Amino acid sequence: MTEITFHFNAPDKMDYACRFLRKAYNLQARVMVTGSLTHLENLDRALWTLSPQDFIPHCMLGAPEHVLSRSPIVLAEQVSDLHTLPHHQMLLNLEDVVPPGFEKFERVIELVSLEQLDREFARARWKTYQDRGYAIIKHDLKQKASAASMTQGL
Image (tube, rainbow, N blue to C red):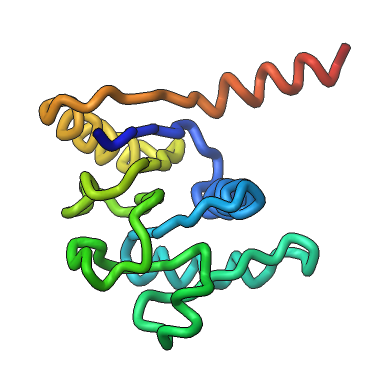
């Protein structure tokens, strides 16, 4: 069964998405990212502004096959047409709704910002996953940040 993880209380969703993708890339994970075209274009720009040492190879779904097959991070508006996807390891959802076809991935990561509307959409996604019988893993980024700042002060 697909593992569902919510990372919530992200102060800046795009910044956190970049950090998450950098970590996934360093762990040699393959990630599909889904969201609106605006979100994907913003993420694409943000990934290109990382320092050269932090470069994360990525492309849009629909890139030439030789690029797509070598890109560990693929940005796609839709992931429901599963036979066109290069892999099904991990799905990072930047969309407001549960993406069709999510159950074909090993893991789904949901990012939730501090914005009220984003939190409301996340609650609806949470309920959808829960109603379908998925156990949900929670990562409260605010608690992690508090714990990190406390240990840095020691």
